Image (cartoon, rainbow, N blue to C red; front, side, top):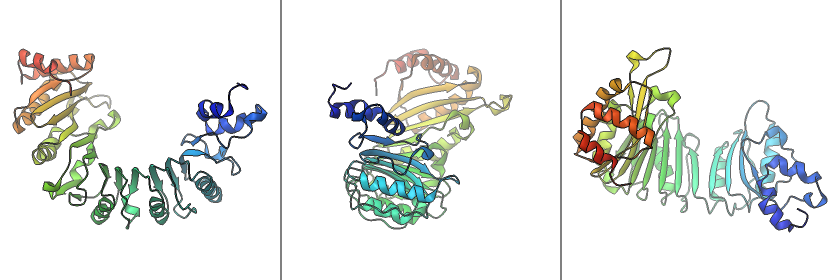
Length: 364
């Protein structure tokens, strides 16, 4: 290793070590002592108690830390944060930082290469950070904390989070502040809110948590440039909260009709609570994608018998085809496709020839 040029050694080997390992291995050899030029990443997995204030914080590219909790020293948090901001202002590319709202770290004039920002803490600090990140592309915002923004032309991906029951004005302000945003993820937990397309004319993709679709309504749909709407599936531990046929009929069905050219991706869950036992909910989940005249069955999971699934799934198919007579396709892993085909046959909505054609359909 001693014959490898230091620059190559730093870039290809030492930059792959954790922040702790980079400091611990300085004792191995004299040429290992200086790690100022080694690319460093401080991840959430890095124990905060293991980061001394006199560590080498130069050339940090990723600063992901959770500085909250009774055991966290506020003065130490502030000192470490300010040192990283100062010494790595030209190399930082990603910040995902949770700190006490009482702390206001001093900011540099510019984070020259920062493209990703998720900051939970002092509201004014966050707003000022956005101002000094000219290359910012991905931004996470706690809407409840911030009431004013300024126009930022480069942000392409925006994630909005809120628990405030009256966040409409703040959401509108956020959207207006980022006129070039292409993808927006909405995690608005408690409030009913409006997405006004006059605020986000350039947006092409919306992402919603599937359990939160009841909160949203739309205005000025004719101004929409949307190409995709995705409902992020929940995990199986929360299966009882998933999108049901009722949700589809009363909410998603309208969205599909309002945005006929948009590509939709969403799950529909089937439950058999009457026959569930030992605290385990019997369920099945199908992942569906639709666009214009095409419908794709993309994924299938079940822990309930075929007979119990088939009758309920027949209602799903009936509701889908009520929108229009889709050209259907099955695109799943082999095992998923076999199990799904059994349910599809048992539900009686299609004959064997049609099902065979679904499986041989075009790849999306």
